[in-house]
Every structure is written in C-alpha cells, then in structure tokens.
Length: 467
Image (cartoon, rainbow, N blue to C red; front, side, top):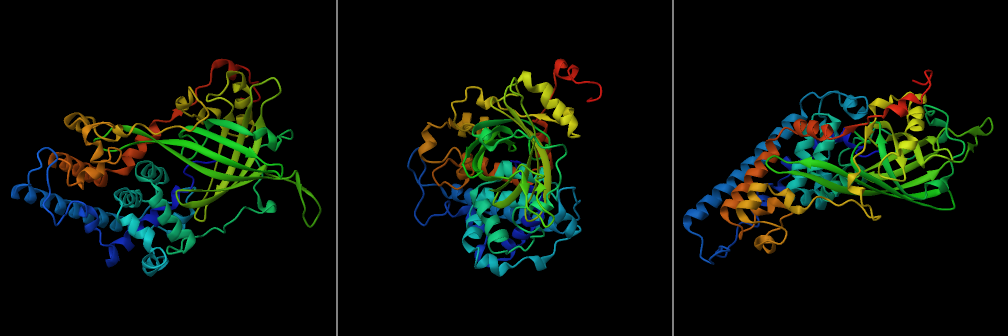
C-alpha cells in the first residue's frame, strides 16, 4: 500500500473542476457562503435574546460580501493558475502529456451539470471541498504539495466528485493509462530475487509499516494493515494511516484515514506461448484512494529467518489512470522495527539497490498502547486556534458545543447564533486557508517525517561487499 499514490495528477483535475465551477451558473458559489447566515425572521443573540442592532446587520452584510469576494478571488487565482506552466515529474505522466497547458477540450461542463450534478453541487456547498480544489490547482504539478492539500482539506465529498468526474463518467477525460491489473507477461522484474519461502498465509493478521522508501507515498504516520487471507490465494486488507496537517492560525492535527485494498497472490509460474514462466511478482492489488482507483504489483524481496522477529520487505510498482509510481516499505508485527531484524533489513535494501540511509522511520507512536484498533484523529478542539478556544471557552463540552460544531470551525462563520467576533475570526481563518501558499505547508508536512538512523551494530554486521 502506497499512501497518496494518486496525487501527482490532481493539478490538472483541480484546474478543470475549478473552471467548471466558475462557469456553471447552476452552482453559483456565493449563496453557499451565507445560506445559514441569512434568515427572513429576526435573529437573536445567544446571550440575551435581544434583536440584533442595525449596526450588527450592517457588519454581517459586510462579512458576507467579503466571503463572496474571497471566494471569487481564490477561484480566479485557481483558474489562472491552471494556464501557467508546471513542471513534469518522474511520476507524473499526465503533467508531461499536458506540456504545461490546460486543454479545455478534455472537460465536459455538461457532464458536470448532468451526470455529476449532485457531487458537484455538494462540493460547491462544502468549504473544504472548494479549498481542496483550489489548493491542488495552486500546486502547479508538485505532487508532494497536492498530497498536503488532501491532508488539510480532503474529505468524502471531494473524493466523490473526483470519482464521478474522472472514472465514472469521464467529465474530465484524462485517462492516459489502461485500467486493470498489469498482465503477468508485462510485469517489471523485481530489484532482487523474490523470497522463495514466502506463503500468503504468513500475512494473516496485523502488520505495522515501520520503514518507507518513497517520501511522497510511504512515510506517513500511524500505518497499520490488517490482512484477512482466504484459502483461494486472495486477501482483503484494511489500511489505517494518518496525515499530519496544520492550517494558518491553528494548531497541528493528525488526520486518521483508512481504505480497503484487495490482494491476489500470484502463483509461482504462469502459462505463456513458450511454456510456463517464473512469476516476476508476489501479488497484485487494487484499491481506491482520494476517489481514484489504483493497481499495484507487490514483490516480497525479504523476510525474517526462523530465528528473527517477523518482518516482510516489500517493493512495489503501481499505477492509476493518470500516472505510475514505485516504492518500498518494511512490515513488522510491532510498531517499531525490531532491533534484531535491522541487520537483515538493511542487507535486503542494499541488495535491492536501495540506500538504507534514505529510508524513513514511520512514526507509529499512536500505537504505543495498541489495543488492536485504528488510530484516532486529534481532538476536535485542536482544530480551533488556542486563542479562539480561550476567548470563548470553546471545548468539546463547552457551552457553545450545542450551537456550533467545534470540529468544523468554518461553521462559526455561518451560524446565526455564534457571537459576531467569533464569526469574524472564523472568516479570517477562511481567508488564510485560501491565500496560504500550499508549497509552504507541503514542506512543513514532509519535514515532520523522520529519517531512519541505523544503530552501529546493524551497520557493522554487514560485510564490506554488502556496504
């Protein structure tokens, strides 16, 4: 499982959808900002039940107009950004195909208004979905930046829109790679010989991902995979992981995510026109993340000896309909890599041509007292700036919790019962979310990853020929 594998294609996707939202009258943006704030009946304050003064109404009208202006400016920046040149990365075939230009012929606005009408309207009505699209468009092809946008703003509403518009109805026709698992005779060879003693049954149960190779896909926090292996050489895998995020003016949060992946273990040989051939991969998988389907080839190139703690060393290649990618990771039965397995893991990495010193150590502290469950997101109150919570005594059980959802700060700006100062502060946070440079957050997010530091004994045990 390679976390965030589909993100490198989303700059074109976000630019296309942003352009459609800007040009579709049926989904005007402005009403979504203040639908809950406007009422035909007189509004009342939470503290005294008195009618708002005309001065308050005037201030709130200004707030609504500022919100509409912020939306329009941000969307304009998004659409403008889609016409700028962006670099092509090694794992971004779609960006290379686009050659730095937005092609309107790839987009059907009619499809958004008909086949994907409901997901599109839901996105327009959801602040984070709009922010996520605009954030990814401003990344201009930087896949790490796009991943950080999903860490901050990603949700099921955005996932549904991506799935509907790209895969289900092709409102955005950017599929450049055939769907489906790679045929056995087209699979790339592994970087080293596959483990001959591997059995599918050995994957049953829970495994923690403790080391990762590709920083953009493999190194996020709290990674635990639960395997249920069937007798027919297939397995289901429930994937838990977390992405750390931080919005301007608010504290750091850990966002717990999950998905399901289906695995088929390959037989040791496969038929061909010239007779049976040795399989080049151990298994192939299929899953869906951020609304898009992915397919992967897994290669088990290392595992523990009978005298070592359990571990599996997995190399993989994968694809979506828009790009290809590769990486590697190490599984263990405990949240940290066992000390007694380090020398063998390092040796496998060397033999596969992967520099051990470039691996990350996955932060699995969330499983320190693991009871078999999934990691939890940070408390909801962390999503509110400390000063905001202190000024208005907002906690999960505070007086305002029955009025506004503390886990969703943007609701402060649209609740007629929230104090005016609180709503103004929430509006300011919205402004910060739109104008913040997503590249800065991406750098911060990836800086939280930890490089693997190997103890001296693990290095000393390698022979000079293996170093």
